[in-house]
Length: 625
Ligand SMILES: [Zn+2]
Image (tube, rainbow, N blue to C red):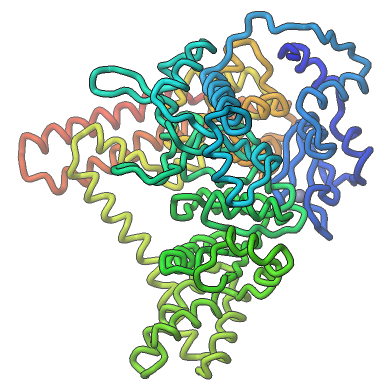
């Protein structure tokens, strides 16, 4: 069943989120908002915040958040449609269940999701039911994967041959052009289409919300010249480094236990899940990225690394430590006996033994020092100094001074070293961490001067902190629910003008809804953002301590909120435009200084004069009241 967007809008605006949430948890008023203990993670001091004005909630602890539908979905573990039905019932709105969408156009991304869903169903059916799927069924049986687990993870099989999926796709009238972009089919030199995953077992890769964004295919038998794993290419619904395998299956349990176990492979995660250990995510195929760390940190600040006991696994652990520390995550590292991986270990020894391994996990300093010890780094004084320097390096990444001090004490006790000595090493490490950033900036400047104009523009565009903050301000204004403000901003700033890509995406969501006559209140817009990360970002932005309307109200007491917002919008757009031009002028001036060719120099000077003129025009255009 589908419910029309208008109806959903009607139901959403009839409900009061504060009432709905109050039925389940105790809220009390603080300032403009309500706060309470978060129902989605364990906490003793409230970080769960509800805005009655904006009809959205957000937890600053676990980053759960959204509108009234989202709350009921998460709280009662029900689907979107069920949650809409429940709210409709509360508000006495009748839902015509037969209601069909009135020629609503599916967005491009929705079409891609649908194709992947169809494909996943097809692969799964091959594995579970197709006679030729026997070979894949045998593979999973040997690895002790039960049929219900295959279903839970949507595991599948792409039949041997080059046109099986192709003919399924034509039968289902799947847009082949799009299937090509999604990497489900390939095209050879003669233009002939073929099944890309042929003969592979299939692991669908899910977004945090549980939608199929990509596939990983593993060969059953090693063939000459084929990789063991084949992954979908990146697309508008799949960015490799921003997905953690298994997160949609694990996120509730991660929140509940306030801990995530990070493993390397798909099969590790699946076997653990099957044995009842469900707070697991896998990096699968890539080194851990900053975005993945950010993703985990939305659910917990406690991570146990459990990589394979081989050299590659140890290297991966060491690399991951720095990334996790930068995000203030508590890291433990668990080690398996040599030759085991989580998949084999839990299958051989069972859940309890596995849980002991997790309990015995070491903190990162113990792990690293043991590693250096094994490398023979503590055998003579000169090497020891080097090891100490390496040990102090990750500590420098922790911004909490108290925590740093505790860790330093730890090292000093363990190796019988004077704390003062370690502190001075730490100071050096902190300083060089800072220097690294500035030298990176310098290199970027130099690079920018070398390349051609277009590319230079791109590099220069890589935001200054000031631009970044202004963009945030503009995005915030777009989510304040004022149509005058949205109209004004959309007329003056194109989405592609935003330097930060996700700002462009967010602006685009608002512009599209506005121009289509849709609602532009935050509680409605939030639903149109498909990316969970972006949802969380915008919620945080909306609930930030510093509120645009408030600080402007202080500046202009007695003026209506709407007028205040408009004033803020005009002012911010002007500053943003001026900063854009100003940054170009700066970059140009640097080039002028270093330009040996007189003609070229003259052109640059002329360009700067034009830019200065632009600045004056911008000032005039957006001044006045
Ligand atoms: Zn929470």
